[in-house]
Amino acid sequence: MATLGVNIDHIATIRQARGGREPNPVHAAVLAELAGARGITAHLREDRRHIQDLDVHILKHTVSTHLNLEMAPIAEMVKIALDVHPYMATLVPEKREERTTEGGYPVRERERELTNTIAALRENHIWVSLFVNPDIGEIRACAKVGATHVELHTGGYANATNPQTADDELETLRGAAMAAHKLGLGVNAGHGLNYLNVAPVAAIEHVEELNIGHSIISRAALVGMDAAVREMVALI
Image (cartoon, rainbow, N blue to C red; front, side, top):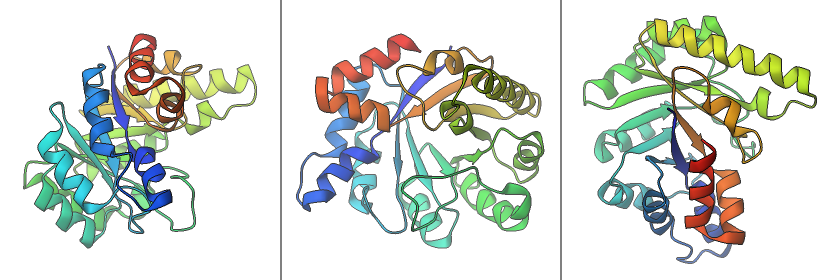
């Protein structure tokens, strides 16, 4: 059965809108865990638009399930990861002008640099996931560069405009999950998942964790973090 990892970035987005101290993403992480989340995800972006360095350090000492640090595979972030030592580092592509991560990491184009980055993290006992499109070639490349996990980009499915396209995207995700499993990779998934579309992805064989943020934080703004997380856990 898949478990839920809650991305708390947008709690920090609300905080940064006023530049104050609240709401605190660490408090949100604690509430999410108490409500049944099995992991906490935070993306420390280069531009620090939401999560800040101090948040990551405090989360490391607060999270009781596991901390998944999303990050660009650059020297600055590797240094922080080696200092914080999260359970997992998920390597994602990052553009300053984007509102959210727009697609999977182009692993086949960056194999040499990724191999070195992943080796540095794994030598320090940090699991490494690559956020990738559900493409068999990219998944094979993930295994080649030494990743322990993949996170399948579910945006194609989540943004489908008709049932047939959604079914096709779901079948692509199933094939990608099977391929990753056969290569010995752990399988996570996420991006654009919400209360209406999560169940079919949660049912995909070999998917271990769904990382969901925006829809949970949006729901929490109306009903509270506890209820929002419990509702998502129940759907999964």
